[in-house]
Amino acid sequence: MPSSFLKSPDNWLWLLVMLTLFWSCQSSDNSLPILGQRKAVTKTIDGKVVTDSVDHTIPDFKFTSQYGDTVTAHDFTGKIYVADFFFTTCPTICPKMKMQLKRVYEKFKNNPNVALLSHTINPEHDSVAVLKEFADNLGVTGHQWLFVTGDKEAIYDIGQNSYMVTAQEDSSAPGGVVHSGAFILVDKDRHIRGIYDGTTEEGVDKLMADMDRLLTDYKK
Image 1 (cartoon, helix red, strand yellow):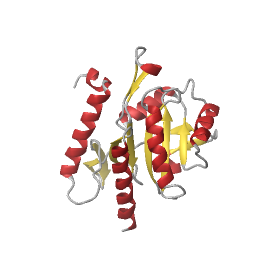
Image 2 (tube, rainbow, N blue to C red; image 1 turned 60 degrees about the vertical axis):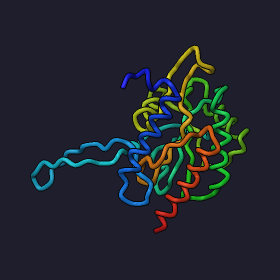
Image 3 (tube, one colour; image 1 turned 180 degrees about the vertical axis):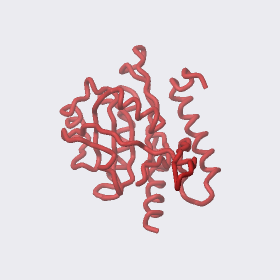
Image 4 (cartoon, helix red, strand yellow; image 1 turned 135 degrees about the horizontal axis):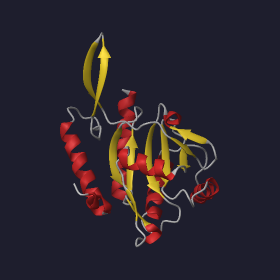
């Protein structure tokens, strides 16, 4: 697939729909599918070399939140969470995304099993202080919804290679970046269980329904 294909948000969303449909068809029960390509892992067991495959998993990470503290994957142990990528000066889809994600925040507010994680893709501008002001203006309090900044290369890498979203610097685009409007649902084992259009009410309604579904599965 040519790299230019993924630079278009429309093409990117189409690809996500196809991936979701594919993995849904592979699911043998009524649970949410685990998205992403399985990885071959070679181990030595009782002196024998064995190759197995494991599900796509979000790796550990290290960023800084709007409170100035360090955030790693271990902070989400025992939680499902929704991840997204944005920047505070984005003039196009980000305001829509944040209003939609606030709906998720309000629905699951104070639920200890749910967290939200928003990564800035413009860390040069979006400092800790800027992210704190942005969160305050949204009416976000506490540590359930974290806005993180950090090394730009690390943010772009985890977005593209782990969360399966894309951001492309483009001087001709509003705000200088073309990026996806996806919300990514991650389970307690760091597996991606769904990718949703975060710019629409319909997409976020589906996300919240799937979050309820996933939480119910854990109760079972």
